[in-house]
Image (cartoon, rainbow, N blue to C red; front, top):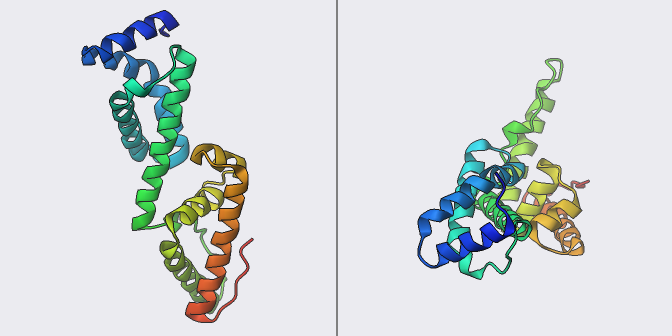
Length: 192
């Protein structure tokens, strides 16, 4: 049951006048949309549920700032909040551990020499260390681009930044990674 624009406008007015229990109707109407947006960004059902909950809490607290009056603008507003909350959630997680590399590791063939397997593991550990030291804005862009395989355009839209800014952040993040490898271990790596 989709709310008509007039119903939505009345519902928001009543909530703002103190009938806060009516906000549950908005949650019921848009919970699947918000959850889907969050899941597409955080890629984990538990985290998506948390981000969706934070989205509705923020929407409730900021409802008086909502300027629209139709369901289309409310959907857009909720999606923007969901995107920002999901990105914030990723940033918080990245402070703990930038990337869970176990999701991205492939099983090495048994025929691989032990020395190569050790070098590969050592490289992953070094990369994990360097990524954890990057400023949040760079680690978030690296996470989205390389591990979530999002395009520059998608990242820009999600972070509400110009595409050029995202491209610049990617470039600077790669440069910092190369510099840190050189400083810490005297090794040079090219990030593609």
